[in-house]
Image (cartoon, one colour):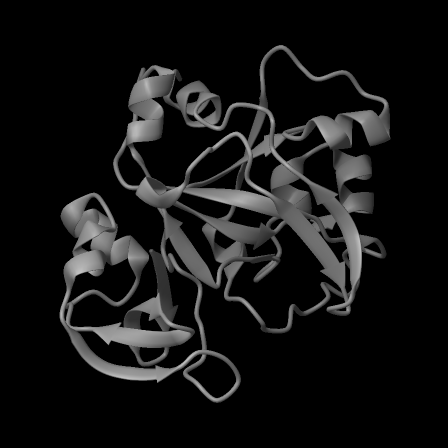
Length: 224
């Protein structure tokens, strides 16, 4: 099940259309805070059906006000191979400002005067449905509500100059996310989720999968 947030309300994707749901929640975040999972969206009554795409409602960021936005550095084996850096024994974690989140398909304003090298990188965003603290991998994955796509824009020169990911990745709207959140119950293998990044909608910038265990990432965060 794919859940979307649109300007017309919360919906699920059915047969290449958006089924707007009879639920009182404005986004995935509100749904998760109220119920802890996406399952209410699976069974909710449909109040109307609209096209999915240019003729349909505009898609918004799935979670408008997350409690925190954590990032994991060197998360892909393929990236480690390209950069020549070893895969760390422990993940490198950092926080980004929640104001950096944006919706899919929009324009990101270049932070003029702040950076001359704004890099894009496709990522997998894990959406938690419950808080975690000192959880093991099994408990951590059980708390995952779903996964979605994200574009991790980084001011590379700011990163080099300051060594601070929070500064280099927190410009307004520089983390577009969505369009849909795939429910965790429908993820067959969390260690084999594909990521493809396209330039101008045509040229694949990078194709990879995630062989590093996804459950370990929320567990690493929850251990602190």
